[in-house]
Length: 66
Ligand SMILES: [Zn+2]
Image 1: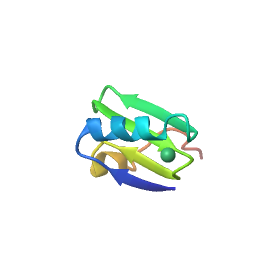
Image 2 (image 1 turned 90 degrees about the vertical axis):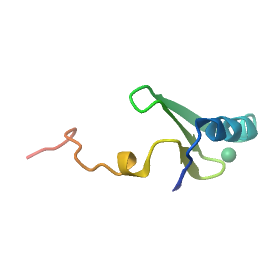
Image 3 (image 1 turned 180 degrees about the vertical axis):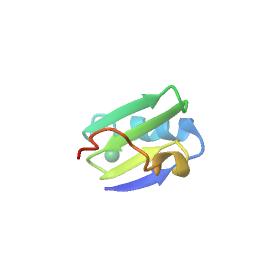
């Protein structure tokens, strides 16, 4: 699944409307980033208005085992 980055959250909303009723999709809203993320299984694309550097942060502490 590829990731597309959009500057404007309105662009994400437009894509959500386009896929609505045609594709299985999940929408996530990040209040921290004030950004929308659309995961569309029909398009096989993740569209987000988060910044690329925010998405690519690798310092996740969840699930870090011994
Ligand atoms: Zn779609």
